[in-house]
Image (cartoon, rainbow, N blue to C red; front, top):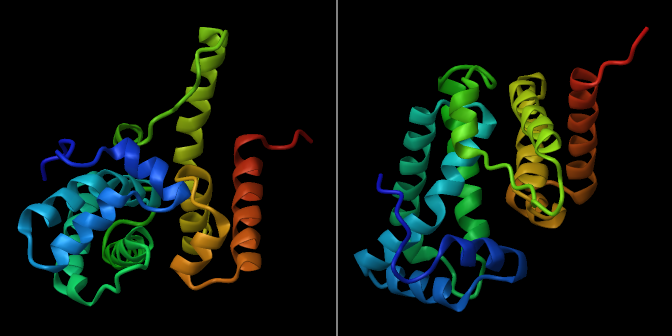
Length: 207
């Protein structure tokens, strides 16, 4: 897959738009893709594939398997986009398909967590504002992120996907609930359980 930026909408615009509602440009691309415009569908792929690949890796797939899951997701999107109802969130619809596809690949691939830190780091960007933060502190934070990624395998599948979406992908609780067909209470419970397990692994209590 070519991971270049599409000519009509930037990844930054999609990331910002996902928090406020989809940009008008995305809505226009979806409508053109529904009408059979191959270029518009290609632009939609370029917009979202990095994030889908990243979720797959964070969930425990190898980069190769994550690429396959991403490709399979867009095959399904291409097949059913004509049935996508205008006015609904394409972002949520796509992610629901992608998450289910990642689940399918997890069942037939290596167990979650059996990936290299190099693979994980390639799709996980640590964003720390310079703002006077000492380099040593930033390096400590980066090390913590690597340790966190290495411990994701201790979570159940449901805990892991909720943690990935809520804490790593910054998806709101209500959106996660809609994507996974879970109540917000259940999403919060899985997230609290995941955080507790990871805290115990990363910061074990001294006897």
